Amino acid sequence: MTTIFSKIISKEIPADIVYEDENILAFLDINPVNPGHTLVIPKEPSTDGLETNPEVLSQIIKIGQRVAQAQKKSLGCPGVNFVMNNGEAAGQEVFHTHLHVIPRYHDDKCFSKAMPTMSDRTKDKETAALLASVI
Ligand code: 5GP
Image 1 (cartoon, rainbow, N blue to C red):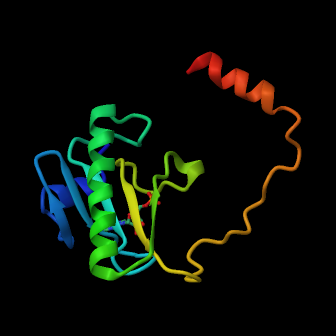
Image 2 (cartoon, rainbow, N blue to C red):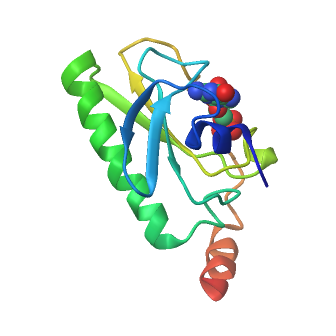
């Protein structure tokens, strides 16, 4: 599937690029959660992280780590989130694999901590066994 990110890779549309090599591109998100919010993407298109070649996925993470270290060093953020939305239900809007690398500050209130947690954990053993049986 062709997405807007293919056009960024081919330079048909502009982006604020922070890193580029043969396989990976990193550029600022057009709608940042905080200044410096960066997207790290593979040049070879894949829909999401579950479909990405594991070698390429590890390259994405490696560059994501370098971007995060650069954010701490240059922007002074004390924390960084790595976020990858895989699938529409998980909030993915652009269907070209991407890792969000988001600078974080104490009390910046970017993400709410008030997420619902499951109170019923009676099926945890069954669920773990189910997952373990297909990994
Ligand atoms: P998703 O919700 O799919 O995980 O995130 C997609 C991200 O891509 C969003 O944060 C959105 O702001 C960013 N984005 C969408 N279109 C463009 C674009 O044309 N340029 C840039 N730099 N970022 C984009």
